[in-house]
Image 1: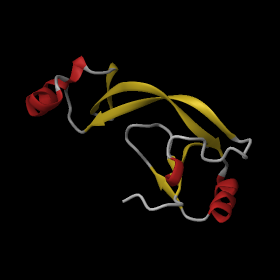
Image 2: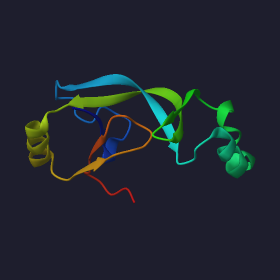
Image 3: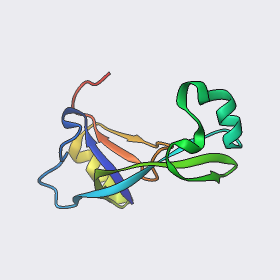
Amino acid sequence: MIYILRRTSTYDENPLPEDKRVFQKNITFIEIRTLPTPQAFDAKFSFSEGKWLEVGTNHRLINGHIARDLEEVSQWVIDLDDHELIEFAKTHGNIILQFSVKSYFPILEIYDSYRE
């Protein structure tokens, strides 16, 4: 499975330059809202966020919720199977596994510094 890989202390840099499994990949972020139509979004949020169809591309429904593609950005990623993920956690200490509605890929953060 491919994970977006981040390190708390060096958020935008290559988190593991010595690891040959880490590479850059362009990822399109997706915004999903728990509203059934663009009109429902506009009625609630257009005054503060603009109209739904004016931002992003590929507007669609996903499981009954409105969705749109946002910007495509280059991210550091790593491809790990289940066993490798456990070994990765043992090697790198504290990790945070996040699931974001804006990304198809889960985020794996090496938590090596305070960020709150």
